Image 1 (tube, rainbow, N blue to C red):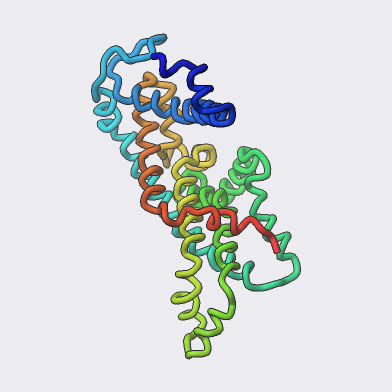
Image 2 (cartoon, rainbow, N blue to C red):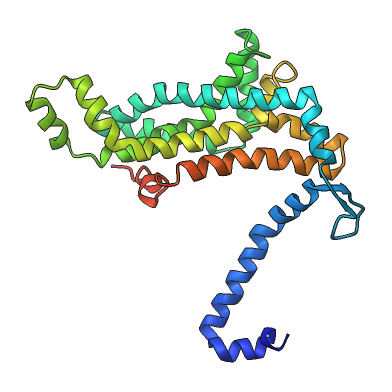
Length: 279
């Protein structure tokens, strides 16, 4: 224990290194403690507050969660909606990002800023306004209505990030491909798209993960006909012990970690911040 003495550590590291070590330790505790507590509770058969460590470990609540048909259907719905929302966003937003990055026209900056409006104020007001329109068009409680809500939430990511990646591609590279006989579609598919793929991949990751965790709009527009993991979480937290909520939380976290791991080579500062500049 004498090696953990703060005074000895202070003199061994020096003032600056000691402060850096302290700040880093506080950050790790602040960031990872809730996650470690969630993992611990997820494998607890018996847990009574105010104990820190569960009284009994096991897989009781995993069996309970995985045996619930409504919970499993919500997991399936979440992945289907996230995949469809990401695919539709790519089809709609990548051409828009290409046009904004390549062409100068009146109102371009206003149009670019308009994609920020969905994140400029509390979203519940936006969802209520959308709900009024959805009632008129019979979109309430439909798969299409939920997809529209998810796409609107991802417009900023799916336009701004690919736009930054596309803007960094020199036109001379595209013109060189045209000079050797490539059609505009071939230039986009074989030259422009591969070079812009890091930005598009990062935008797709944000869109997919954002769709998985979207709850307010899904609940307002799709519930109870369409239920997702994020909306089901409300019921799990309110109706079951904290250990069941921890299990469902881990199920929500695992896909996100897996996707981030698989696409880690695309997640770079240039890919994320390249689309923030407005020219």
